[in-house]
Length: 469
Ligand code: GLU
Image 1 (cartoon, rainbow, N blue to C red):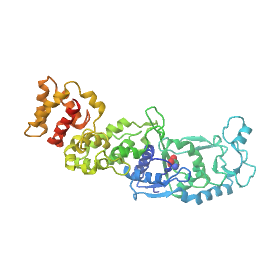
Image 2: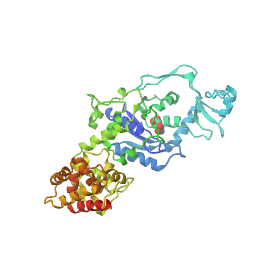
Image 3: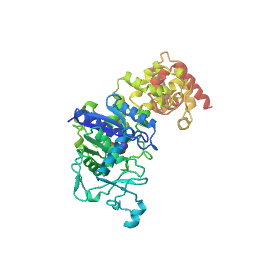
Image 4: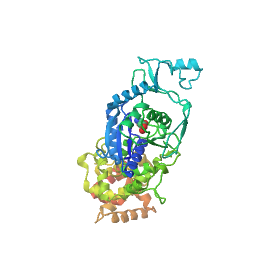
């Protein structure tokens, strides 16, 4: 039997990191089993779906390594509407489903003030189809439904506790529970790997498989991803969009490595490992049952390590979208003709060891390309103290006298200027840094000055000096 798994997102918003994790788990499982990964877009909720969300899913999957053309699909659930209706009709014809026109209020009036689920009122009343008549599945009165779950063992559900649930609405349209099952059936899905939040649906869905006469799949319900307060990640509260991480400059490799560590770890106390190791070692049945904390700080640190591991040329390439501004990435503060690729290449190795996400490249190098630096006023006020004007005067004079404009000479020269005042290098270089780069932190100063060049450095120092009059 060929293993067939599917990833079945609903295109109702930005693509969620939790979804990316499920997709990767499905992807790896299929690969390990020599199986097939199917992508199905569950687009039946017409009011909430937008084509751009579908495009977002496809491109986010592509970015994370599940590339277009390397899987089966995408299929669209809406294209399968005929099958969904046919399945509903089969269940009705075989007596496994019946019509009901009760409102919630009707049920409540019959059973007491609190709605505890449907009471089975129409089970044997023979109501036929008609507008406003929902179709309900007749759940067994006795016995249990045992689902085989690769992560959870065999969760067992008492059938008598499962209400006769709706499978098609009053307008005849099948609901998610049924459409999802029928699609999995039609697509020959053998393993359903999905988020834990669907576990309550699973006994109902398994009953539908059985009632439709097909052997149910093996399930795997993966624990949810939570924030630092142990709340389920939510798109209203947390940064969850994979695209947002991508645009901030997370590397796909770091992201997918990190996502796979949510609830699982490779052997040997390692966290940062080549993707091939994850593909070899990952085991669904080793996934932790407790919810997994999505720790953005840790992801940042991870990403920094991935950035540092890149060959410099690749790092330079990887920075390009932020240096030019493409697609959803904002343009940098300089004009494209101001950009100097050689100057960038000269400082790139210095930046590479310091930034955690690629977008941070921009504030680190903007001083090189802008005609005058973007002065951070708070940094200016904090740094420019009594004596800064004189210090800048002396530094300008000493730099003007330099024969060779290189980092080492610049450093020893400024060190000497500071020493005359009894200042350590750190204190001496702060006003120079703010004057030249506009900021208190950044790339190593003397290398920066070397690349910026004599004229521009001195012009900026003189301009700062004038502001201090
Ligand atoms: N469209 C559903 C979701 O995004 C899929 C559920 C499933 O994987 O079965 O939650």
